[in-house]
Amino acid sequence: MILGVQFQGQVPANSTRRWFTHSWPEAWRVAWMVAPTWPMVDGDAQIEWRVQVDRQAASLLKYFIEIRNLTGGPVDIEARYAVLNS
View (cartoon, rainbow, N blue to C red):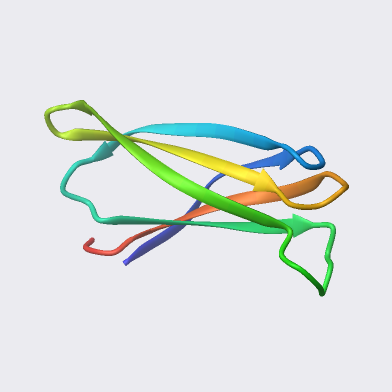
């Protein structure tokens, strides 16, 4: 298994941001996770996310990661991946 961080960013209060990452080998089985990194709050969920995918070429995939901030303040995030079949 390969684990890593693809990008970091910030989602403003009560808003949604969308990122993309391209040229992933089609044969890889990739799982995406998004974690808030700041502020540190032990309470309700700060974010939610969804992933969409596009076949950009015969053997390549492009992922779109949409992250929604559920709070009234900005939230820093980290988009993490796991390649499950490496």
